[in-house]
Image 1 (cartoon, rainbow, N blue to C red):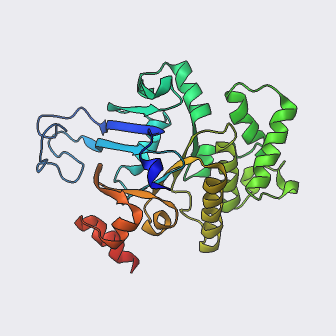
Image 2 (image 1 turned 90 degrees about the vertical axis):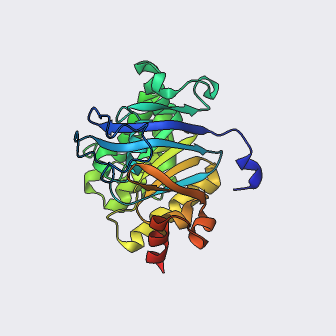
Length: 286
């Protein structure tokens, strides 16, 4: 990514994003700083879990933004909020394809949310069961996403599905088979093809290599790099593995207990981590 692209208007902008499970109380109010009373992101006084606390970031055109952190840090919750899989407690998110980037997607009607989900975002889930109809064919899974976006041309949808499945190197003789018969790596490739079906400007990738063998991980990561290079799509890449983020991300956010504790160019974070938690992550790679 060039320095010029960093000076452009962001494709996606997130401001003050918060997600809590529970009503909160005066002890754990997210407006209180510092939050010494909270045990990690859990309030022992009222039992509220603060999954996200005042999260803010931007994603630029053709950029891969990595989000790294341990399990429970809140990184996957960001993607759930953006893709409307869960409702944020407070905050705003602006994407350039919706109202010129001037209105938060969280203010959109249910009809507009479907449009945003089907046209402006593509998501690849950590668990393919969440992103695919496992008993439908690979072709039908991609067609489903296109139908949701309003496409009714059967021939065009089948051609597009075949093109995408070839792009992710799924053998043509398996395109009419159900993903339940595929390996984990092949299921992830079908998810990626489905996510790209309507040419979204932003891909949301949630732990896409977790549970895969190392050789399969490498193939999936190479595929993601190829897609980013050829299609110039922006990506929000969530991982607990800094090695994955190092391979793919231009910039990286480090999350801990629902907060961003460090952010910057990936190379800078790897070479000179400032936060103690980031230092632990980086040193674990050595």
